[in-house]
Image 1 (tube, rainbow, N blue to C red):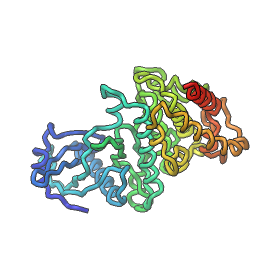
Image 2 (tube, helix red, strand yellow; image 1 turned 90 degrees about the horizontal axis):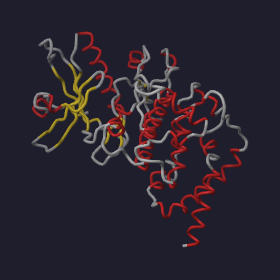
Image 3 (cartoon, one colour; image 1 turned 90 degrees about the vertical axis):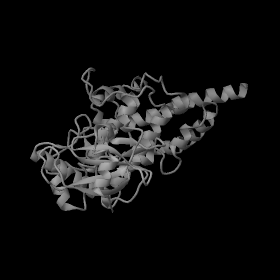
Image 4 (tube, rainbow, N blue to C red; image 1 turned 60 degrees about the horizontal axis):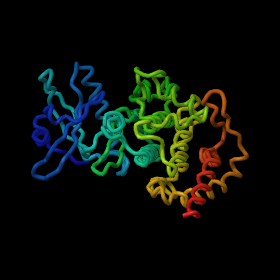
Length: 383
């Protein structure tokens, strides 16, 4: 872990000037720092200043973030931890108090929240699928790593984009590591998260599990596909979950899609439908019905044939990909017949018991796929 000189970071951020501020969260502010001699751009996070107990709480969260990030091996889906620096000042009280600064890679293209709700040009459907896959991969990295990490604050504002527009998961101030029992006991003393993304079943410390992150991921999926905020007081229902899940149950899947960019084209429509079914399972009121993040990644095709590559295929040749997908679906259909998926009632009944996500998705929209394929084949033959 590198130790940066504090005065060097002060110079790099022009004394942490407002012009260098690029983001502000619940417990810290992030500044852009330019190391002129090294020709390097950094992101520097420091605790938000407040009254003593608030400053101390923010400092503990920042120290927790440093502890979690420093325990993780490098990953293309997690924001890169570069090092720390020690500050000896409290700007408001003018007192000499030791606190840490967190130094990370700089993410120049903002957050997913900005991209979905503030950008002039909303992301395309292929880009949305790619982002969904990258976030899932980030959560899988945390849940299947050693130590196992539960993020506890997965939301669009904490998904940042690097210079190549790759999505990375950031902000680990509320994260809990299963290895460090002292950190876990402190951080998990009370449920924490962001309203709209936070699992409603996470009400007491003993309810903490990886399924809490899965719920939050489901909310982000609905946000990505619909373009609606997790909570929007100007809409009814205000919650994207309460609005979208009934539509999924009624098979009104395309009514959920972001109207700013039109309906998904045929070559990606099936993928969007699949993601909506994934989201519905993730936000199930019964956490036993939620898939693990590993099952989600497997169903999205990331372990074998990555969906990101498939959705980049030109529409004119998409019927070939659809035929291949249909062949794979038919191989799994025999397995799917062994199970029955409830279509009515509470959305927690979308799946039961040991029904695997990939077995549910195997039978989704197969008739629609067959019609699309037949039409494409006939069109090709006539051409």
